[in-house]
Length: 290
Image (cartoon, rainbow, N blue to C red; front, side, top):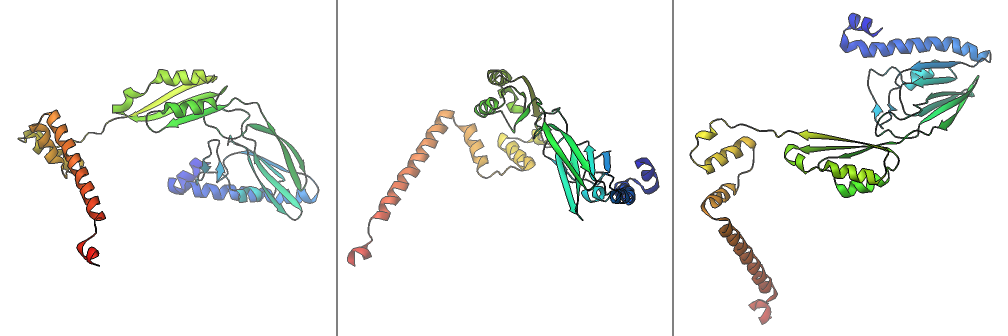
């Protein structure tokens, strides 16, 4: 019992010791299962639990000390077949030795219950003999559940292309946007795209990231906007190179004048580039003399 181990060893040592206990138990089963194999009697180990480094239905590898089994400890039970439940993705492992074939398998689940589940859903029909275990995998007509995720405002063109691949399935659209862009997400347009793609069901989930504001103590007591701006740069760790001059320009000039000066500056840079290019093409005096 895990609670007993916590009480005896402390929570930090509980997971490792539980693994030791499970390994000892399965090795104990192995003693009798070897004898049964010698008598020609097939053996099966049935359990609910997680095999370390197995893959869950979302494609995530399960690596944790809290996982009950490893492939090695399960094979140590010396059963012909190990039939497991818990992980909802089909997967199997086999071990060949001394003309024996041991098989471990998760049947997975016969249906999909979460968006984004990968792979076929199936059930297994086993044929277990002493020293040899096999199974047939039968795929079920499970409903399709798709996950479409955007890191930012959903791209409608991309969504439309993906939605066409999800016809007849259940679709969840998820997005994460900063607070200032939340109003730009068109949920009605998302629903229209999914509806046009003839999906069986839809779900839209949006996560709004709040704006993180940093306060600058005493900023209100500073005399000018430029001073306040420079203090904000310091607090927010924003590079201030050239920004102070631009603030002064915004305060002293009209927008039209700023735009005119900018355009004039671009023209001067362009003309200078043209002059430099022409100068590079002209031969030097030394080149002409040679």
